[in-house]
Length: 388
Image 1 (spheres, helix red, strand yellow):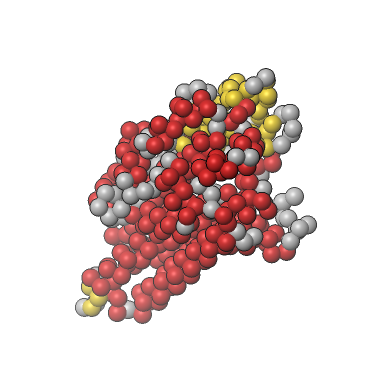
Image 2: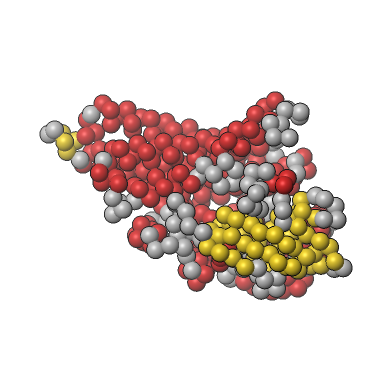
């Protein structure tokens, strides 16, 4: 991260979303150190020791948060490629092996953000194919994605499910959206109009295929702990525990970068004849920043430990970590700007980027408010859901 991205992050971030070519080049660089989504790399990253994924998230957040969606959102659809139809595998596996595949997770809609029970995107089974119609919004990587994991309501069963779509085979339109932070990360709307996909690429069918074939199960980058969670929770609920830990620790990474910059500035900036680090209020800010970072980091890795063990506590802890990490990053970067004074407001330094990127962390993958409701429900138990 220090060698490849730190020197370019600040200036490149100002130029807007990555092109497809840039994104693929970035993915190839990460593959060189084993951060990739072919079955072998993904197993090491997700299954053998989930702590590694936490470390990757934290260090990527520390240097350049715009890279987070590129890595994080490709992982989920890529995981299902080995379980898809043979034709899909034949087309996508070579790209996956070469780190040339960009993915997205398409769930959020204009009228269905946190309330995914009211999805308007529909899937109608016609023979051997589903026909998908609807729209998604605020989808990371939408405009450059080769594959999408799309949430839709199955009109035959009335239940929500997911489909693995290839853009070349099942074309969909996209429109770029602009946002406060993660400036280099593409984000967009997606539009599906009579978009056809083989029924073999529907999530429950892919999961059933895996569960009935031990050799296929070996290809899935899922730890024993995650398998235990999948047997006790809905697939979506179980699978979202790790991304929420990732968001928590990436937030701590952003906060760590702002904290390190603040320590350096407090020692070098002279006012009233001495370094500002000698002033009590500056020291109090640094104390507060340090406590938030250390606490958030411990909570994030505790949640990952619960996932590794397959403990049902993983849902509560990952939700808490997501809340705490995001809110901590906002507070830490706020204080970092104060410590830097006018320099903190300048786009010549990365402080304002840290602040904007930190503010992003409290919303994607579940807002702080929704995570608090999930936490409350897991504490109180069945019958105490605040939103059903």
